[in-house]
Image (cartoon, rainbow, N blue to C red; front, side):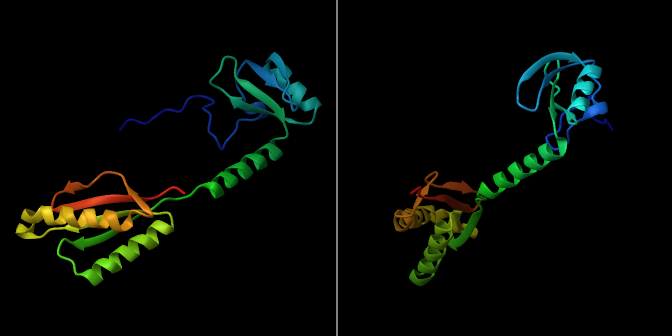
Length: 181
């Protein structure tokens, strides 16, 4: 079994290489006020950071020479974590809710399914409506297409569809998205 070898000083978003663990001979330094100080030997860069009682943090090891910053590492790490938490808060997880029915469906059952779809769409979820066929029922695909058109018409005020419909085995389905307001 082959094992992937990690590069020396490979960059990970959550783990930064700091101070004496930086093993490049020369580095480009950016100070705590975001001014570019230039290219220094690593020993000189460590002295500069030590004089200011701050840390030398490797920011980008893909450039030539690698970029390091003179910053307070604890504060830097805290702000990075805070930014990632804020980004997670702003994300909206879209889920796909599936509603299954047969092409031979009674009016009351149809209304129940439509009401479920409306509820899911108002919550901002995608809705996958699946029509299932058993045995030789696949011959009546035209009736199922009419039912899908009826569903699209019923949900048109609050939903839009990605494609008209897809056929997958003995199933016919349509994906509905909530309309953007």
